[in-house]
Length: 209
Ligand code: ADP
Ligand code: AMP
Image (cartoon, rainbow, N blue to C red; front, top):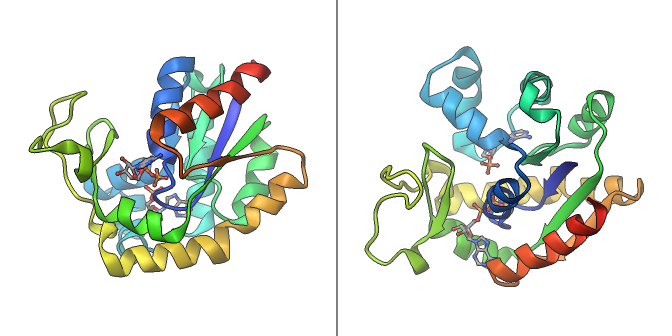
């Protein structure tokens, strides 16, 4: 199954995608993770993307479309995948239509106040992509999955979060009607707790498998 996860930053896309990909045995393709790796490795793409990411802006469409085209051509995508963080603009969605057959778009809806709380307390593992929140971490500072030290993302500061939410509402939210018009959209209440969101998504995906 080829699945898109759509929702604002902090909605829980990465949290749910990682768990569901483990369950279904398909890759999680997070464009944010791919770009952060490129920035860390100082590749040509990383050097171009860094400024946009630090400002909370979208990296130009042509860079993202190229990244996704390469990634979807890899063998592990043959049995399905979850796109986490792509597409984020209508031109990206139109480009994707030419290279992939999407089965379902999972939309997670969360209000802005909760998103700000989630993003300001988020801690991530840059090695394996696992995501945590300070409210449940206690005094733990390393990743449960791989032992790496957890960090706070540079773009999870208050000013950048504000920009990212604005960018979401202006540039990404139009994808909700784009996919709803194609009959692909399934919307979920992302305000529920992590296990409840997971159960509702799996119920819908299970019915389609
Ligand atoms: P996204 O990938 O959509 O940006 P994440 O999955 O990284 O969002 O989640 C953002 C933060 O919110 C993380 O700290 C995560 O632990 C927390 N979180 C995710 N889902 C929920 C939920 N349903 N309820 C409360 N907190 C959540
Ligand atoms: P994320 O990890 O999904 O929150 O993404 C972090 C940052 O990477 C975003 O704020 C953008 O700067 C950039 N990014 C990730 N995915 C995309 C995309 N599909 N289009 C444009 N920029 C992206």
